[in-house]
Amino acid sequence: MDYRSLGRTGMQVSPLCLGAMMFGAWGEPDHQTSIGIIHRALDAGINFIDTADVYSQGESEVIVGKALAGGRRDGVILATKFHFQMGVAVDAAVGWTGGDSNKRGNSRRWIVQEVDNSLRRLGTDWIDLYQVHRPDPDTDVEETLSALTDLQRQGKIRAFGSSTFPAHQVVEAQWTSQQRALGRFVTEQPPYSLLVRGVEADVLPVAQRYGMGVLPWSPLAGGWLTGRYRKGQDIPTSSRSQRMPTRYDLSNPDNQRKFDAADALAVLAEEAGISLIHLALAFVSQHPAVTAPIIGPRTMQHLESQLGAVDVTLSTDVLDRIDEIVPPGVTLSRSDAGYLPPALTNPFLRRRRTA
Image 1: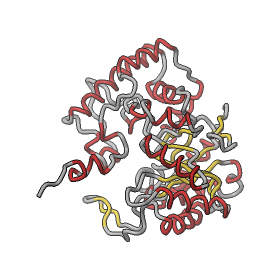
Image 2: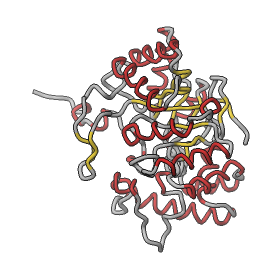
Image 3: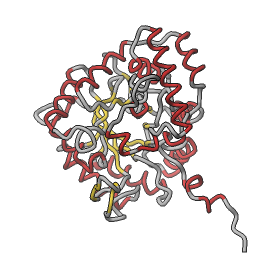
């Protein structure tokens, strides 16, 4: 397996990153099964694992830590993330409930506390890449960068990055780092797939401009690009579709457009003689800004179906056909963007108040 530079960090990573979101209560609850998947990925040459504190409320980090115990930690570039609410109860009917409102966000107070929690769960003395899972409109970016710089100097983390930041906030963070003599975000983790191409317009060029590594999440579009969404077949159900029904309900016109595009892309993959999974992963990986797409298998079969994508190179003709099905820079459903700024979610921020 050929390895790639992780931005300008000097670290070399595999062209696929193993995402651990599905290890634990959110996906595969059996720890030994999840550990077996991690070990298979490592044996196949993957040396890059990405998780987050919020995945199954810390359980994913615990599983990853177990998998790397016994001498496998040193050979792995280990990444995790912070931001979302921790210390909450999970109710199947209503989602997350309760929790301390300060056990979340991008404040110094929370970062310096949560990094120690992640280190303990992962069973390690250091994190190679510590990432801000989402922007926090309530916290100045200088506060976040300052705290992360201190953790880097203390040796608790080696590098830090962002996830799902709009391009203008990536630029603001880079500017702040330069002006305040702070460490900087060296990676960005955006949503990017055949169906979610919005980042091609600005985030990916900005990341290239600053020499950032790019680690796209959900390159299979949450299962839409596995080949299971085909016309004339029953619509599949999954734990993910049950947790996020608005992203899968075909009565939503955006999702219907995704369904039509997924079917057309499956036909294109068949004509090219490859699986839709390989087409999807190769497409993301072939963008010159991309370092390593993050795959998130729940089963060993899922993993095996994705590993071979590193050997696939798409021809210009196939790439042109893809552009006809989903034009460059287009995200078919806004709900797949991963983050909507307050200016869009709070109507009072875009309506002038009158007496």
